[in-house]
Image (tube, rainbow, N blue to C red; front, side, top):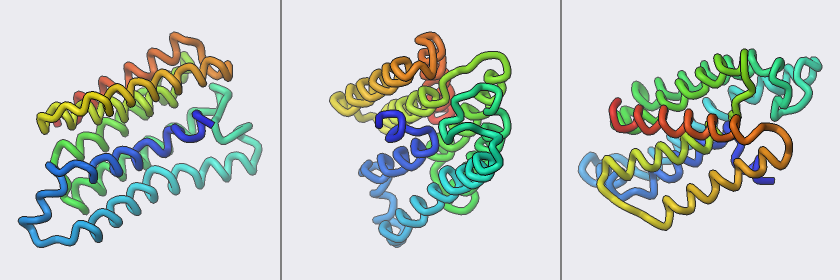
Length: 202
């Protein structure tokens, strides 16, 4: 259940939901005259399209053809094509955030960081089965830490909760024998560092 709730494809959606909880972000609409509700649903819908629907379609086709054994892509040798297509979908999501929604650069950084993280997981997977789940939850945690750093807020209990969820996902992946502890830790560190740095430096 934990692995399903924190599937990598759902992580960008969670990050956008978190974003709209920040007064620092939503207050900008009070000065522009834009409808926050409409903008929110365009953002959420676009995020679902680019980071859930588009990556799932080829997964479904590959599963029907027998080229992948399950939607978690448990076998390392079956991951190359889905991961590369996921990277392209995340890249289009970043473009959507920047050129269509005109998001602030720190939000675009979340999209760019996510795309880069997926690409690095794709490359590393040729030699080593790094955890995509942990790269995802690590990216979400790194993005939230980055946003809080830029805005200057310190929601201690929420940050502790993110660490707790990260540990929970890591334990679940090891318990399911999907990954070794080193693959789990490496995935988390990759996702966290890439998305954090892209968020604060983009």
